[in-house]
Length: 80
Image (cartoon, rainbow, N blue to C red; front, side, top):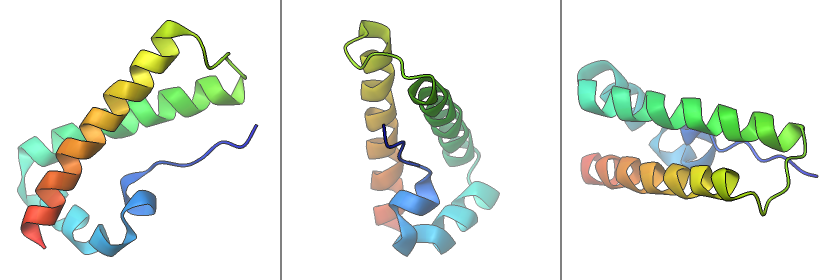
């Protein structure tokens, strides 16, 4: 099983400078990105242990990660 890294700077390389700027200057963005990073690491840990992808809780975590990423992307694209 291939495990993808979904860190913000990997998925949004064009926004790396904006990510750094917002993490320093915007508490809400920093907290949201910390929440995203924590959830992404948890999901990747489960993937490494080859948890079945049809597990309901696992899929719910992936959906939550996608929603967080959408929120973060909106903030990033509004700043660039």
